[in-house]
Image (tube, rainbow, N blue to C red; front, top):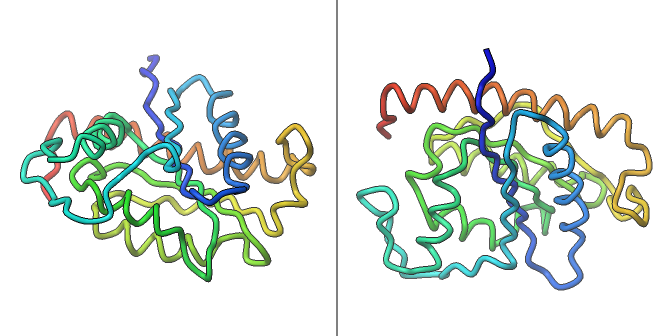
Length: 197
């Protein structure tokens, strides 16, 4: 039996000038696109303006006041799963990512979330640990496998590929395998019985 591809949103969290995030996000997207079981949507928060304040959580999915939030909610709602590509800033994750997470609510429910992190000595893992707690409030499932790039600027070549690709590509496969399993199971479950938070 051939299953239809699931929809994966790769969310690029950094919005800083001169950011390294696009290198990591494009690598992650290429890893996902090599699979035959997924359709990828790269959501770059630097190109996704969202209001800092004044956005109320809707009672009904997709009913948001701000047009930018409605467009973002539609993309999040279409996705069956997510990979958040995040740096670590000051032992935490970027403020723009918190705004994006909080901008919508039911669109996150009952879907898997995985993490690809990068940064200095910790490789962004402190940001990931905080994100697991935040996402728990929004009713997705965070998967165990994580890909992390410590001292990231020295880990990629000029073409945007990791210099030591074997271990990180294997880690990406493990992450995407877990996400694919949860994405299909939860997609079927949502279709059979709507999730109530």
